[in-house]
Length: 150
Image (tube, rainbow, N blue to C red; front, side, top):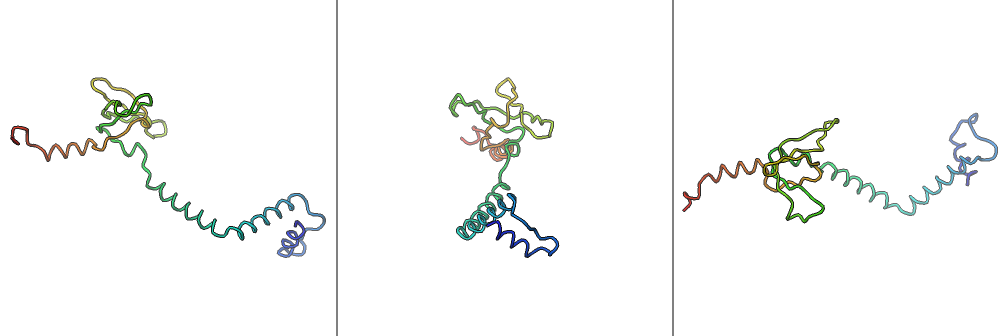
């Protein structure tokens, strides 16, 4: 196998650059890899096409992913996640301020619950479906008081 691989390589080279003598271990390993690659491409022709299409799809999905930093804004009402309790018991909080790290990425957020404020990692914060901006729009639309509706 290594002899055939050397013959193939020597045909493509100039006469002065051709290799002679017994094949060394590098040539033997290169010949094995080349034969394995040929066998794989002939045995599994559709596998590479499907892998390429899957890679393209995953690349497109990566473009749509949003970081938690982009989803949560200052003034939003959020849930503070806790692994020791059920989601129904997670406390509500309001995002007061983002605290960027040395590299400029936000990893810690100052949140306010009731009368106290805490620093919490952004991975443990879960935004509610109604953000602070949506709430202001809703309040502007519903300016009537309870007395006006009755």
